Amino acid sequence: MQSCGGVRFFIKNHPKSCARHFVRIPAAYTVWSVLGLLIFAGYTVVDFNRLRRAGKDEAIPLAASIFLDVFNIFLFFLQIFGGRS
Image 1: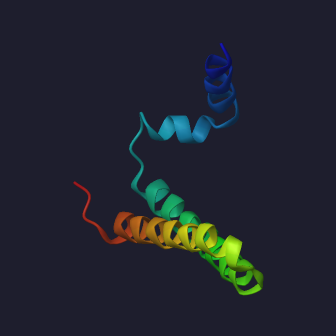
Image 2: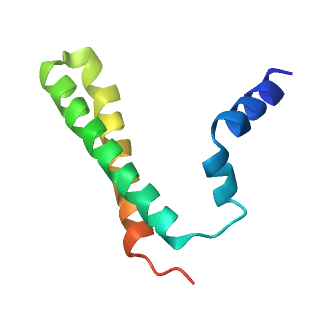
């Protein structure tokens, strides 16, 4: 029952992202990709700062987090520079 409530919350609070699934607007995809790049670039900077201050116990999860940040940045670059037909 909670997952249905989560879906309702998502649809209610994110109408633009729901509309993206039905309407194809190329500029919206570019804007979304650039915003994603900016967000994950910020996450990467924060994670590197956390890694610099971290002890040995926190290093591995932070390294995995940095890997995922870089992977997401790569995916957003693919969305920007990849050909869409």
